[in-house]
Length: 257
Image (cartoon, rainbow, N blue to C red; front, top):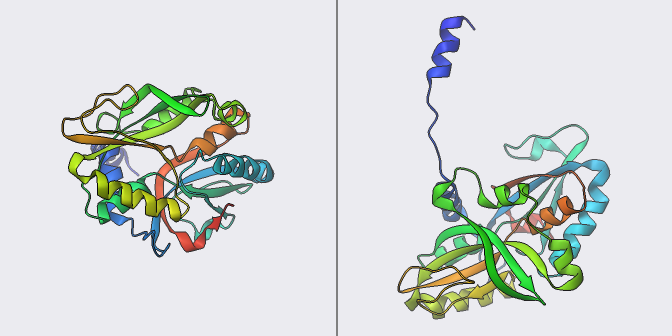
């Protein structure tokens, strides 16, 4: 490439895409039907060294069985040629797990105008969610808030599993208060489909774990889909996480029981 072309390429401005835009695009592509347990779900992708796979899967399963993940499903990918846009090294492999955007997509397809608001850290005491200690709004960042919070070593997911107290990743969305009954019905269907990840559904016009919400709305707090990855990171195992990066048919995933 000659200098003129290099200068031209440097001058091309790439659009800034905020997290909320990426989330909304993925929400619309989710086709999962909890009554049939079929369709596409939003997924997070983790890249690990293949030598760590056994240990990582043990941790993932432990977190999922403790109810600190979004849906108890896993897909391990060793053949990169069958995988999407994410690349990884020769001695690495990928693990796909459900993302909480799946919940938003199902609510949306059920006619509920749900709107994701922020990701954050929730303090748990004796198994009870107490408050958000840190939050990042989806409209204010181009990087997934959960990725940012994970990078700051603010979680203690492993401790929550062991003692019932600590800090986990979670996220909040809001919906009109008159949709509450329908919201609870959809969440019950998701729970029956192995997507039991809701921490809190608020009353209308009340704070949600210490955070105020819009008037005439309810807040819905879901456990973050990257808590299994946070637990792996807490135990010193290298892991790279790409939040809400892929869509996958749930039939291709293994249920964790």
